Amino acid sequence: MPSTRIDVRKTYKLYIGGQFPRSESGRSYVVNDAKGRLLANAAQASRKDARDAVQAARKAFPGWSGRTAYNRGQVVYRIAEVLEGRREQFEAELRASEGVTAVKARTYVDAAIDRLVWYAGWADKITQVVGNANPVAGPFFNLSTPEPSGVVAVVAPRGPLLGLVSVVAPLIITGNTVVVIASEAHPLTAITLGEVMATSDLPGGVVNVLTGSVSEIAPWLASHMDVNGIDLTGVDDDALARDLEVAAADNLKRVRRPAPGTDWLAEPDLDRMTAFLETKTVWHPIGV
Image (cartoon, rainbow, N blue to C red; front, side):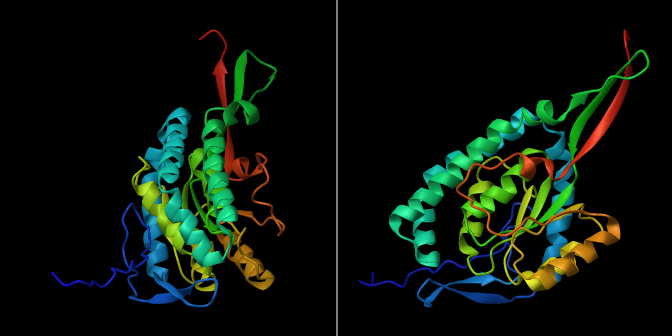
């Protein structure tokens, strides 16, 4: 046995349909640490990868949205449990990629875990809060209940863990499936989070993570006719955001474009859970 060995450097791949494929284009890009040194190579997703991710999300949607809200909450809570068990890896990645202190990295990881638990708790409560029993002029029950929109594309903010968890968890807890473009500058924690999800009872395809150029991938998702909504939280370029809004209008996608400057450490409101919900109204005769 040789006395020295060569480290096995991790190659960060995509997360699509519960698998970790390389980009079909064969491309990758360099991810540097906070001091500009090589940290890793990450897959650079292409248009074909985006289409594959949408296909996986669509395939997963009936099963995931058909689960009980209680069960979806259990699965998201399980993600928090597994993330807790790998907290040291996430803290190390945050310190390396963003150059934050150990204390701040621990704060972000704690907040990401707590955020998952917070949304897990809302899973079987959001319907009571935003649903309604409507008075009508006839012998009928008239009930309004929220339902997921379908496949939602998300451009994640720069906050590589807490920001990502904060935009993905409210979507899946309400039954949507997601294709998320990770932070272009800090993609590594997004793929590590994919590894957590892959071992957390989350069905393949519910969350799909793409890494690479936002300006290259997002337009394909915005114009994709099988994507029902798009969240532009991580789009900093106003011109690109406007182009994405125009592309999304072709099939009447729901578009969320919040004002910049979100404090991810602050407790969120319900808006992120309701932004991609539809309302179904059901009539039922009284006494039947």
